Image (cartoon, rainbow, N blue to C red; front, side, top):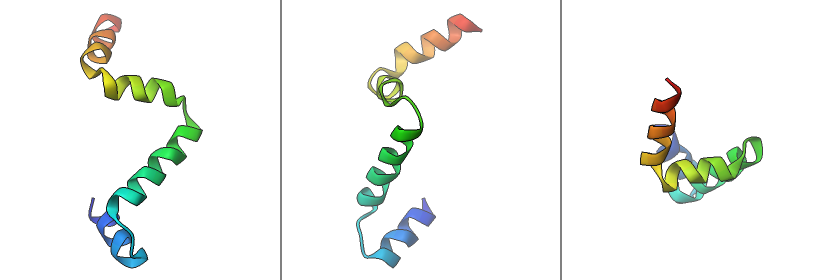
Length: 53
C-alpha cells in the first residue's frame, strides 16, 4: 500500500484513481465476471473452494 501512496503523491492523483485503473487493467487480463462474483459473494466462493478440496 505504501507504493500506491507514493505513486499518488508523485502523480498528484488520489489513491482510488490508481486502484481503479489497476483493477480495470486486471479485468482485461482475466475474466472480470469471476472476479466480481468473488467480491460480491465471498462466502459462496469459499464454500466452492472447500468442496473441491
